[in-house]
Image (cartoon, rainbow, N blue to C red; front, side, top):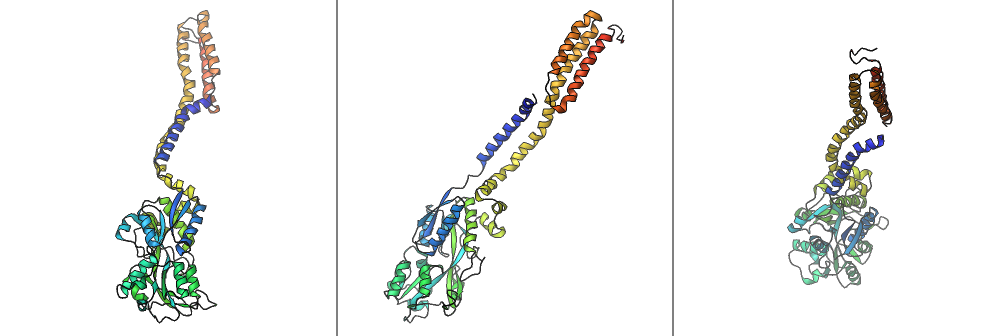
Length: 431
C-alpha cells in the first residue's frame, strides 16, 4: 500500500529526527530555576520596598521570589558570598576585591544619598561639626554605617563612640525627634518613609554637604548630587533651598553562578522599576553602568549596549528562554535533516517503481520460454503464466502519480502474449 511505502521510507527519517531532537534537548543548557532568594534589607526600608516590587514582577513571569530580611548592604554581601541568596541590592562602595571574584553587578539602579539630619537647634553647619554630637550611623552590617565611618575618616579620623551609635532606621528617627540624640545619618532612597517624615518635620533640618564635589572626586563610589528646592513638596517648599549631598549608587548584585536567563529577567525588571524619574534624576537614567564597581557578565554588557534580545521583545519569558537555549542546536539538526529530507523523495520513488519494474524480469523470462517453444498447444502453459502475471500485476496498489507505469507494464504483458501467439519460433517472423 502507498501508505505503507511512505512509512517505510519516511518512518526511519522521522525516527532519526526524533532521536536528534531528544539529544538536542538533553544537550541544551539547563533550564533556569523556578525560584530565587532575594536579600531584601530591613523591613520598612527602601531596599525592602524595591525587593517587594521585584518579587511581584518576577512572579508574573513565573519565578518565585523568597525575600530574606537582612540588616543591610554588608549583610547582603555576606549572604551573596556564602551563596545563601542569589540577588541583592548593595550600596555602592562596599564591595571588596574578594567580592569581585564571586559576585557580579547587573548595574546601578538608583542614587542613594547620604542624609544627615540634626536637631533644629544644633549649631552644626557641616558633617565635620558632628564629631562631638550624639550621632546614630546605623546598625552593624548596614551600608549606612559603612559609608558614615568612611566619611568620618575623611573628616578627621576616628570619632568618639557617642558619634557612632548603632540604631536602626526607625529607632534613630524616634530618638532624634525625642531629643535622645543630636543627629542621625541614613544612606537611603528619598522615597523611604523616614526620610519623607524628617524632611517635613520642623524639629530637624537636613545638613548640607558643601564639599560634596570634593568628596565625589576623592571617593570613586560617591557622586555629588543636589536636592533641588521644592522637589520633595513643591507646595510646602520642601526643601526651602537647594541642598548639596553626596550619594552612592545602589547596585543590583548577583552571584556569579546565577542562571543567565534569570540575570536577563532581572535586567528587564530593573528597567520597569528604576527607569522612573526620581527627585535626583530624570526618567530613563537608570539602570545604568554608572559607578559599577563589580565585574559584569557579557550578557549584562550586551544588554546595556543593545537592549533586550529579539526573543525577549516578542515572546514571554518561558518561551523566549526555551528558544534562546535551543537555537544553538538548530544548525547541527538542520545539517542532519537536510540530506535526509533530500534523500527521502528519490528513495520513495525508487521503492514504488521497483514494485512495478521487478515484474519485468518475469516477463522477459516468460517471453524467452515462449519463443523457444513451438506454436500452438506447446505455448499454452506460457500464455497461462502470462495471464496469471497480468492478474498479479493488476492487484498492485500504487500512488495515482505512478499509474502510468503500472498500465505500461500491463500493456507490455499483453504485448508479449500477442507476440507469442503470432510469432514463428524458428524464423521469429510474425505469422
